[in-house]
Image 1 (tube, helix red, strand yellow):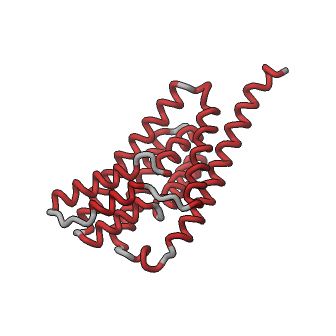
Image 2: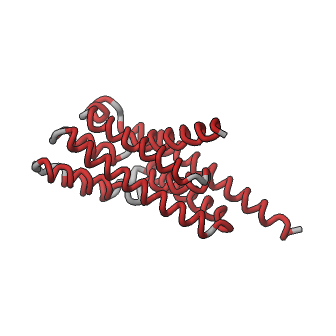
Length: 211
């Protein structure tokens, strides 16, 4: 039992961390930290990540609790969305969110406004982001809202720590386009696996009807 919880925790933490650390949101944290005190930026980003995770978990829990019979459909839809995100990443489509975030981090602000800006920018970027969709899908897979919330929150706060302390390291030394393509391929694989699992579960449920 404990071993299963550890595996589930590590799975959630690892997936969320990997996808977020090279995400546009983390680069926004890096950009903010390059202009302002990194501890204030980290504080705002960390709270935003926890809030966004709570929203994702709440959405996933409502879906799982209220619509258990439709869970396979949720997995199919979630998997399809992840695949779509991955394909979009491979095609190099840019979101307007990133531009808006970059415009906001150009301004020089006081400590309180730095915190508020960090919080609002990161929360805005996380809404509908890959990791939010992935968190919702993981709720359906693992069926333990508290575990997913804690693991995903810790992963995102860890990413905020990396972003706030690393400055421009990732931007200057890691080819962002290459990372985007690799992560997009992984996202497609994760989405395809989730979609396939949903189809198999749906077929298993529907099999007695066919007979």
